[in-house]
Length: 93
Image 1 (cartoon, rainbow, N blue to C red):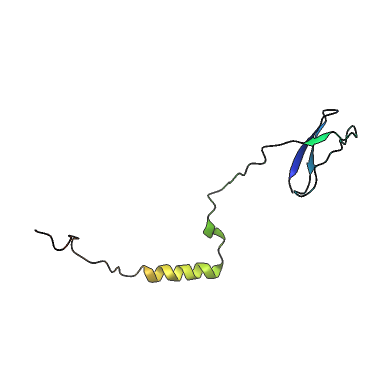
Image 2: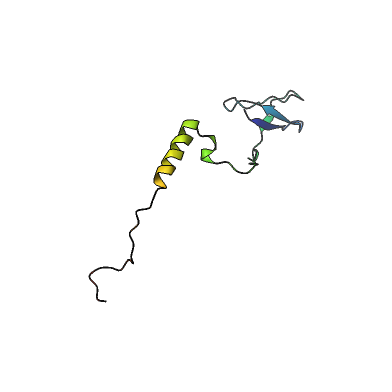
């Protein structure tokens, strides 16, 4: 649940309120009691990633990791590349 900033137009009191996203905005000021409070538009919280990095495969299951290892071992066998140079056929030499 996000924290919203509010300001009262009557007494200039400012406060933060922890509310659900679907909750209606508070209109009553807790300081003066008048219904002049307005929700302020903020920039929101920034996301900070710390550490060596976050990857899609960081949290894979053990069975996925075993299958990926087996697949990479089977595909890393002898390569089937063709030797020779790659000249187009049918041309003059």
